[in-house]
Image (cartoon, rainbow, N blue to C red; front, top):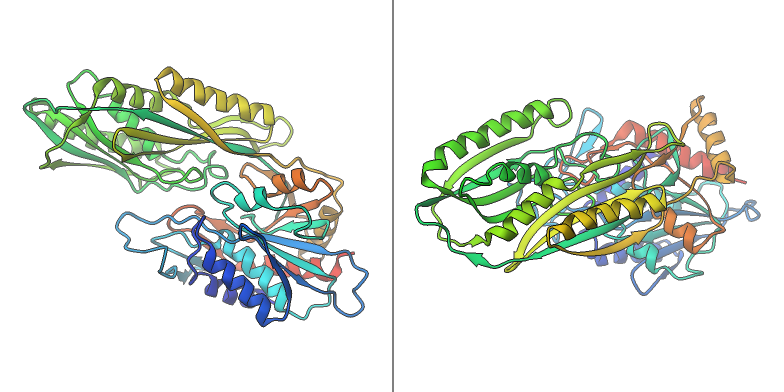
Length: 476
């Protein structure tokens, strides 16, 4: 087993449609893999898969290990892309030592973890018994971990292969939840003499709403709300407002249609362009490509009733987006954050706003969710919470941590960093359901996850695989 064999398996995985909630073809691929290698496997009622491999000769007394990854991927693409995630293989290139999907997400989160597990299952390394666990719908609510029943896997040591920074071992993560807000609205007539403008904020970098929340990326949805709020009192009307897509992805694009009094059209158009310069200045280092545009539209339409439009826009400006608190225990770790994820007007008469909150402190997680709830309730929104999942408290006396640090030191002659992460991992749920588990998480270096341009560093993948091989062959 080497990095080439892992990458070759990952190349096959990129051909398989596996958006969260639609992993059926990926599940079948895993079952077919188990059958073709004559390995025992189980599939539960929701689609989780576990494949078992017995110990090599002489390794029967080694404790079993479970290597865990998730089947699904975040499916995001650039606005001009014609990619169909339901049918099309991911298109990628290899350049400058990276495997890159330029117009879509790559799915290395967590396809590379799946590939590494499958490489372990088909290799002939001398190792104890292993179990490879593949969960469903991690990206949209950790449904597989939530729905997993006791006894589905058997090992008491779990290695999660869903981390994104080689050289770092993760022993803790944030918990989180989603907060969804709806506003009911009616339509009203566009004022006589108005013209329709389409406003866009686009080409933001986006990224992971947990791991990248402290990187000062431009949130296109909140920035659009900011601009629209500045137009209040000038006779403009909101017709539509769309932006963002998923709870766990920083929105890269937003679009609004507005009706503007004819006398204000040129001035508003100039202000849109000037706002692009403002964003370029404010995000000159962290998000330098973000842009604005304005276009006159020849359309017949009605506006959102003014009182609701005001409440929607004002609440989106007022609600916090970003880091709320840093950890008091681990230097440089974000403790608590909240994220404005999307706005949708797909159903006539209903505006839906999605947000997510994360914290490694359970009480702080609820407190920040209460802040978000209060903000939108004051504006007349209806608020629903979902997808609550626990954090993973670090255990610095962990046996698998000790073994993995020793393995890393043997391979590379230096100590790895031992850290917690502000993203959600399934480890928190596993620990809640199976409190006896001893766990660690590591992986190769990925960048741009949950956004088009996601990329896998191939040199880091070599080190990731070497660590995995050394760990599994020396574990005791």
